[in-house]
Length: 260
Image (cartoon, rainbow, N blue to C red; front, top):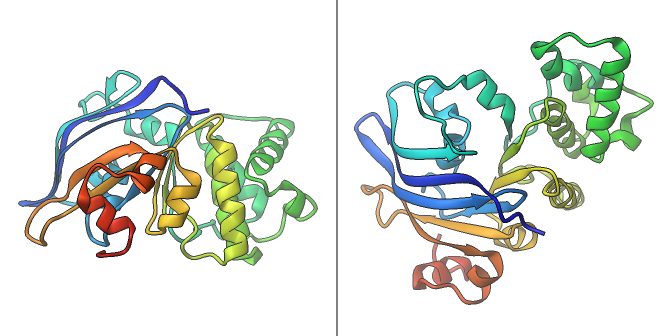
C-alpha cells in the first residue's frame, strides 16, 4: 500500500542554469512509501528535477533554485541544512552502474564507515542485510572479496542499491536505473523496486512508459512546449489514471507515442 503521509512537498519550484530557466512553477506532494515516476521527453529536465531532492545540482556552477522543497516539514534549501547528512538520507542510483573498483564487501561498507566506527561483526551484518535487501546476497555471498567490476551489469546495479541501503536512507532517487540493462536484469531491478517501497520513498525517472506503468503508484509528466521555455508539470496523478484517463491531452499524446 502507498503511504498516506506526505514525505515531500514541492512548492512553486523553479531551477536555473545560469540565466536560463529550465524548470518552472512545479508544485506536488509525494507520499511516503510510494514509487513516483517522472516521465517526459528527452531534455525536459527530468534528471535535473530528480537531483533537486538531494541538492546534487548545486555541484554544478551557476545554478540556483526558487520555491521550496520541504522534506518531513523542513525546507532542504535553507542555509543551515547539513548537505552531507541530507545526501545520506536521500540515496541515488544512476543510469549506469557505478560500483567502486573495490571488492563487493568494500563497496557495501564504504558509506557506513564514513559515518562511524563499526566492529568487524557489525560490518559483516551490514553487508549481509544490505545485499539481501538488494536481492543480491544469494548470488555473491561466497565471493564477497571479488572485485565488484567482475559482476554483470545487473548485479553491479543491485550492488549500487545495496551500497546506498547500507547507510539507511529514507528516500531513494533512481535515474533510469535499468536503461543500460538487459530484459532479465531489468525485471530483477523492477521487482526489487517494488519490494523497497515497503520501507522507502522512491522517485524514479524513466523513458520507458511500460516501466512507469508497472512500477509506480504516481506519475508526474514534465513537458517543455519549446526549447526556449522551461519545463512545467503538466499532470501529476495516480499511475492508473495517467495511463487510462489522463486529464490533459498532452499527457495522452505523450504516453501513446504521438510525440517525444
